[in-house]
Amino acid sequence: MSTTPLWTSSAMAAAMRAETNGALPDAVTGISIDSRTLAPGEAYFAIKGAVHDGHEFVAAALKAGAALAVVERAQRGKFAPDAPLLVVDEVLAGLVDLAHAARARLNAQVIAVTGSVGKTSTKEALRRVLGAQGETHASASSFNNHWGVPLSLARCPATARFAVFEIGMNHASEIEPLVKIVRPHVAIVTTVEPVHLEFFDGIEAIADAKAEIFEGVEPGGAVVLNRDNSQFARLRRRAKKLGISRIVSFGADKKSDARLIDVSLHAACSAVHANILGHEVTYKLGVPGRHMAVNSLAVLAAASLAGADLALASLSLSRIEPAAGRGVRRTLELASGEATLIDESYNANPASMAAALSVLGQAAVGPHGRRIAMLGDMLELGPTSAALHRGLNDAIKANHIDLVYCCGPLMRNLWDALSTGKRGGYADSAANLEAQAVAAIRAGDAIMVKGSLGSKMKTIVNALEKRFPGKAALDEAAV
Image (cartoon, rainbow, N blue to C red; front, side, top):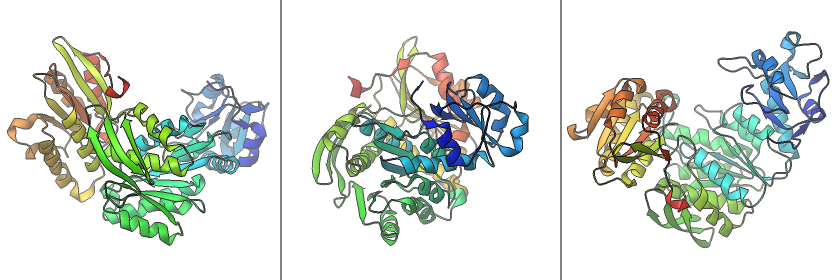
C-alpha cells in the first residue's frame, strides 16, 4: 500500500471543478473504482458501470478506509451530511478531467500502445524495460477503454520518468478521444488483424480505426509501426498526413528500422539477434513465440525513442513474463508424472490463435506426451466467422498439434474440419467440456487453453489446476 500522496484534495477539486463536502484529507494515495479492492487512503470514484452504479458502494468504500469519495451531484443526498466527498456533475467526466490534469503536470516520456494483438504484452514489456531505468507508470491489467485509460492516467505520479498506456477499441472513433487525453510522445501499433469484424467492413477499416492513435501524438513525436503487416503503408500514409515525420518501422522486412536478423525459438523463451535503429543487439527474451520476438523490436525501438539505454533495455527483456491468461505456464501434478498447462484463456482472434498454436508446437512434451489444444469460440468476427474458425486447421496441422478439444457453436466449424485422428472432444460450452478436459490429460502432455473472454475458457484452466494442483512451470529464462 502506497503512503506517498498522489493528489492533494484541493488539486483534485480544482481539476474536476468539484464542490467539497465534509472534512477532506490533505491528500489521497491512490484512486479506486472498486470498493472491494480499495486500499485505505485512496479516493473512491463512484462510476456507473454496465451492471452496477458505484454510488451503491460509497458507504462500503468509506468504511474500508477511503480518504474521500467522488459522487454525482444528483445523488449527494444519499450520503451523510459530513461524509468526505467531492461532488461533480458526472463521475466519469470528473475522472477524465483529473486525467487531463495528470497529463498536464507530467514531465515523463509518454508511450501509447494499440494494435489487434499484443497490446498488453507489449505494454508489460515496456513496464519491465523502462522500470529498470527510472520511475515508470503503466496501465494496470488491460485498462484500455473509456474508463480504463483516464483511470490509468489519473493514477500516474507526477514524478514518473516514463508512462505507458494501452489503448483499445472494438468500434471506430473510440481511440481518438482517449489518445487526446494521453498525448503520447511515442505511439505503437503492434499489428492490424481481422478482429472485431462484426463492427467493421474489412481490415482496412480496422487499420483506419487503429490509426486514430496518431491524432494525439505530441508535436515532434514518433510512431512505431509493424512493417511486416499488410496495413503498414496505409498506416504510414495516415501518420504522414497528420504531420508526423518520425515513423519507425519494425519487423523482419529488411527495410525495417528495428529489424529482426535472426531468432532461435525455444519452449519457454527465445534468443533474438536484431538491429535497433542502427545498433546490433543480441538478447534473451523471457517469453516464447516468434510473434513475441517481433513485438520485442517495437519495445526496444520505443524505449530508445523515449531516451532509455538500449543495452540495458535488451538485458531487461530476459526477465519479462507472460501476463495473466496470455501464456502463463503451470506444471500439473498427475499420479504418473507432470504435464504442462499453457493458459491463453484471456482472449482470442485468428492471429493470436495462430501464434498460440505455434507456441504449443514448440512446447516440450514427455516420452508419451501430446500437444493438446483446447479451444473456445472467437467472438465478434462477423460474417466470416465460420471460415476463420475452420481456417485454424492450417495452424493445427503446421504445428503438429496432436489433439484438439473444441467448445462453443462457432468452434463446431473447426471440429468438422479436423481429421478424425486429431479430434479430442467437443462440447457446446466450456462448462460442458470440463469433464472431458480433465479426463484427457496424461503425464508428459502440453495443454494450451484459448478462446475469447466471452467463451469462458478460464473454466477449463481452473478445472485442470484444481484437479492437478501443481506449480508455476520453471521458465528457461529464469534458469
